[in-house]
Image (spheres, rainbow, N blue to C red):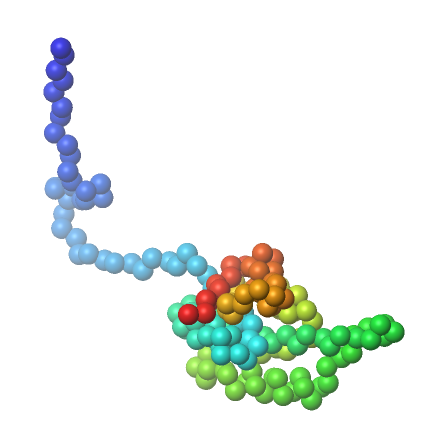
Length: 172
């Protein structure tokens, strides 16, 4: 039977200065952030759950010095079979929605608001592309059954088609 002798392990940290190096003051340099978040998109439908996304987005915007864009997408009303295009939502309704969005703006942040008329996920994705969003923060409403098929598809489509990462805030 052959016996091998093992050498003692070197227990000095791999980045330790040699024992003979002159003493230096410790200088801690900031590590550059790997994430560059400049534009955060927050889709809102004014439900309590969607406003939860805004509560997450504000600290993100402050931490990264990012600009928030709040978007509300008005789904076009169904059109009559004989109409060649869907009816447009009135300018008064758009103005009322813009006012609601403006009331949600935190005063200490740079915030834009926009209102669109479209299929909700398409409108959200259009705005994300236009502003070069670095992050979308949205919520899931915890729908089940038929409501999940109809409304849950919005979040699913955003997650699957977004040009940037998406943070989905759960109902809890």
